[in-house]
Image (cartoon, rainbow over all chains, first blue to last red; front, side, top):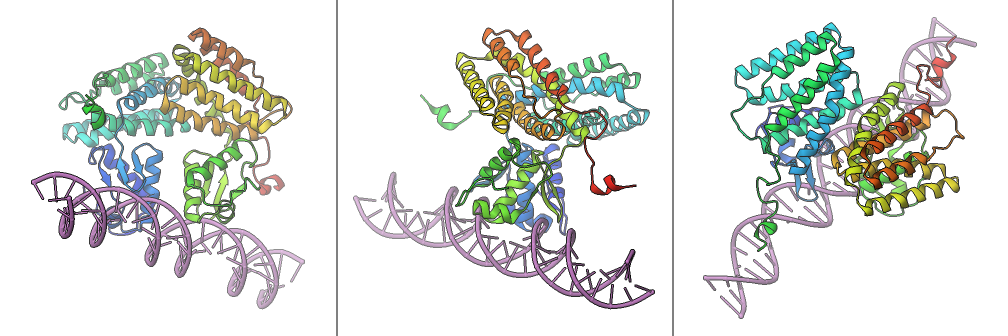
Length: 229
Length: 229
DNA sequence: CAGGCAGTGATTGTATACGATCTGACTGCA
DNA sequence: TGCAGTCAGATCGTATACAATCACTGCCTG
């Protein structure tokens, strides 16, 4: 699970960012163990720093730390997965509306460039990269809406969404269609808040449809339960 | 700023909880410095543990850590204060609606007891305690709505609200009127989602009205600025 | 007398050492 | 052969030691 060769001394934030990115791009699987010593070697720092990074990721919900066991990439349960998208459905349409009322030409230009990068990644079939950019797009909407606090929440939700997608994605081949992003940017440019809100609502619903979040768990929750009678 | 005399070894979570409670109850002022050694002495643990607690509170937005300077109780800016209540206005009415559809008799009984504790605290004029209980009430609504992820967000928002109230409260003597909580519980009992949502929306607006979040900063930001000219 | 500069004490940042706990394997006994 | 008990290695948790930085004071100089 080599991530990147940083020969010398990184900060806790840098390590957390790189781990976050690796998780977001599905280069680290859900449930993967993150041994402290190993990360120390990779980044050339002491365990003190690595632990800071892992704790930070725990607070963001990307990593689970079990006492005396270690840190693992989080595995959202079905309920947690649903809650992520319920929260997004609550928050993001409102952000799209607010963004439509505030977006400047610079913001639009930024989003256009962002979409182009997304498309490029898709063309190159770099699924992980495309996934990350697609998530960033949603965070940018909150930034344009000038809601920094909600932006931090949304960062968490988008990151967790990457975990949910890794676990509950229905068809591996289906690619996220980016026409919704296209339509959203158009609505923002026109300052059309109603349309922006509707597109975002529909977009999240589309995403949800591509996930398998029905009651049947994809695997037995615990062996004990599975073998009970 | 003595908080509590815990002679021996507490965990990082316990320390974070006690600091959080002290901040929530306004026993620690915004901007107050939190020296590591001092907290070590109070709780009888090493700096390692205390730092974990302080970092956790930083992630929750209650504490600001400045490199080589130390940890301080956060002082939300005007913009941050507005964002807290904008986020709450977005999230909480939806939680009230969802809670109305799910509340069990046990939930109602719990909320009744909670309101009684609130009233008692007010009667005893324990403003800090009342403030904390009032905040907890809002978190409980999210719990009843069975939205654990949003509940964690709301915990953050409520905690930050305590900081905002400390900084921007208009009239010290005015007490939060608890009739909104009363009405909300009644609506939940009746399963009246529309009313619950409306009451919550109005309640948050009332709260906002009691704050002074206009553009003029309530006090001088720094001594230097205050004495300039 | 004002301003700058260096020294000192206090405080935080990082690394490391040591102790606790878990995992897995090996061995001895039934 | 099967099971249990114990031992060793690996890994994590906490405390502590040392280095870096900051704030403050007092002195020195112009």
